[in-house]
Image (cartoon, rainbow, N blue to C red; front, side, top):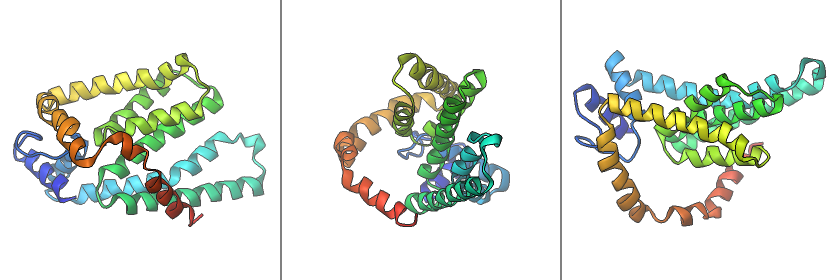
Length: 239
């Protein structure tokens, strides 16, 4: 999107997001754009990241299947068919995300990091693996997803809620603690870059007041099943 590229260029020229240039997104996408301009003085890196994200989304289901099925349980023909089907489904999903979100948009990046978090969560549930690595890696994925667009937190929480038996202890360990680590890391990052004050004093009031008023109630938009059903139909028609 041109606005993200403009903000990235502005950052390399000393402008501050939300103060000098404003857009209704958290700073993650602006920093990717700024990094591209800083390293190459053009948008090449943004296209590379976009391509990697789409490819990554495409391979997440197949990698999850490959790691989840034990070697002794892999019947060659069945496993190959299952793996191929998951890869095809992932490729369709990746292309659909790219088409639905558009070029260099936060939705594809947020979907990628959220998908990795969900895949890791499911794999660890299946293998009964819990530890510091899982918690830290989950926090990193949440950090990047929220850095692209904050509402991804609802998708991540819904995935955790659906994929695990209801247990406050498990949800605390697998979701709320990584979320707390991610939020703390985001706070530190924005303090370092001097984005925190404008984020809280300019961006959040704009999003919670004017943006909601102009876009409509998030509750009513969330209950608009027609959009969801249309998207599911457009995706599933290729499977």
